Image (cartoon, rainbow over the protein chains, first blue to last red):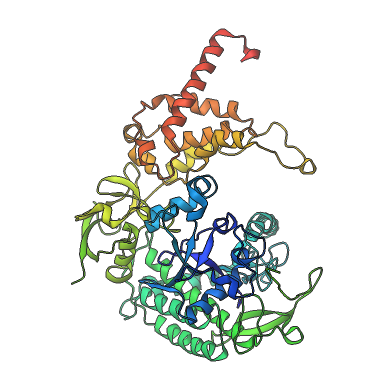
Length: 354
Length: 247
């Protein structure tokens, strides 16, 4: 769960993605001085035309990391929603933008109120994709019989510590179909659930009634806890992490878990109760956040999207492993490991722009 | 002082009220906020019990359609600043049963959508080994516009015919039928003809054109319906003039 992909070009307020295609057509990333700063980060030399695996066409994680370094040097711009840089498409002209990137222009006009034909687009790295997920085999089956997962929710390990854009399509189409077929076959072979399963369902229904739907009193708002969790994860478990920031995040998440018990809920309805779903989602997100932080804390190396400034090197002897998070007896995650099976592509040095 | 704007929002909780009412909320005015941001501000800080649907906040999922000051809109793509001075009225879409607050029941559309068979129909599926069904850019352009539909239901909410005749199959379903009829890989047009040509199909449309005006994705359902009326008329003419096998 510690492997979280950032996408380097999201709009600062909404987080809406400006597609890679904008850079593939020749868009430039510029700092506050109008300088193509990626040339300072071992990503190749600036050329007038886009070059594969170089500069703006470097990988998402390296571009996101370069943004953080640029921000540390004070060379990013600052707006109401934090730091940002510019994605400049103006030199491509209206013709290329309208035929090749119509959706980019539409999104900018509709959601950011700027026209990329005439203006530069403010962008910053945004959280994009979880490489981790519920551990499954190639049939989408999890270790829990009857539970199947596919797509971003699952980890069938077609990605490792990093991922290439569009691989989510494979996860959805190929493994979605496989998981669906396997789940249907499993269900068809089962008998009606026995009394113990029904009793478990009753227990869960009672828990939701007591802890959420009928809950009165309480002082914490869902949105406040969610915002604090968001901030904690961005600051402490984001593009760069250290043992110290992760320790701090772990403490903060534990206090958020405690405050979650003091939630104040206004909606007691059985009809389309979106406050109840928001509360449940927050509870799951807190669990996921803890799994990310605990896995990241124990991985004392840097690999793919997991970059520890206190352990900058990759360590295959110690950490060529999948981290598995289980819910421990105390509700906190317990981290276990599974060795990685290397088939065709051993981990290697990643070189760009050369 | 921070500028503020007033929203008048439909409330309807079937367990508590027999009729919808309005609630008034004051939210900060920010020029980069859309109506959906204001609704989320209400839910997050003022009243957690307000219910509405949304997901992507970028005009792709089609779930945040509501009426803003009387017109059907995607609330994620409607700036507060375009609805000033306020109070801004936010209501559920017209012509659908209201489940709760701003949430409507779309099952009527889901049934109709399935009827037009919105998928590629082939007489014979080619084996995988023979590869993809290729298309030229021109063949793609023939239906691409109709494929942009996000099922947001703004066109149904804007259609006075659907308001009067709930049996009318409606703009989006017809546009999506046309999306497959015009696809060079599809051979299912005859199977869609029956549902589209019957009384509740295309012929109920009187070409008001509101569906096309409110469509956030420029799908032009009104154009699809007019296009199909021609197909339907030719088929009807052929069925009168030609022996059965030649139709």
